[in-house]
Image (tube, rainbow, N blue to C red; front, side, top):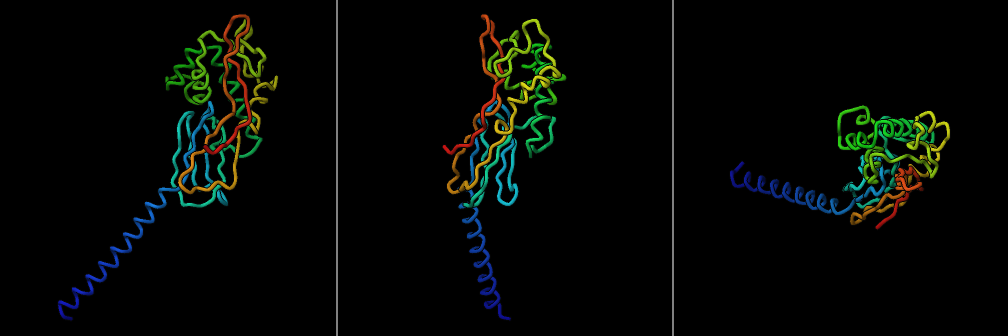
Length: 232
């Protein structure tokens, strides 16, 4: 084969290769323009997933943080669920609400026995019994700006800190915690979400702590509201 012929074939193959790669790069850049930005506006970490037949992408998003997930310009169902360390990795059914309530009850009992200064240390990643499985609840308490000597209320009902001990058994037996961590308060999903041009969605509601004043004393009041997904 003549050198000129070989050179022509090589140049032709190289040109085709370059065209192919340019097309792939262009498609890749185009794809990155689509997807979702999910903002966690709740008080707890949430597990967010983008689903079609099943979950294709998922991430744990901390309070106040945004998850950016590039995808193609296609349709998804967005799901968000309160994520508490110590429960199963993925909360799937209403049956998971009871274990969550039990863990939160244990957290609160420990927190209001040890004092909120200990909780603040746990929220900051300090070493101790509170730091391994209660980061979400600890952070939610601290974020509410509550004093170290705050008492505890759940759903507006006083449960401890004013002479009465806070116990996990007491909290779960009264069903107060379970009324806050209901299915609608810890899970939400939205079908038919289009990923074109990377829209932003906010997750709001869910369990949270609010300040409440009782006889001049600040109280940490654990309340819940339906979790919601809205496009902004």
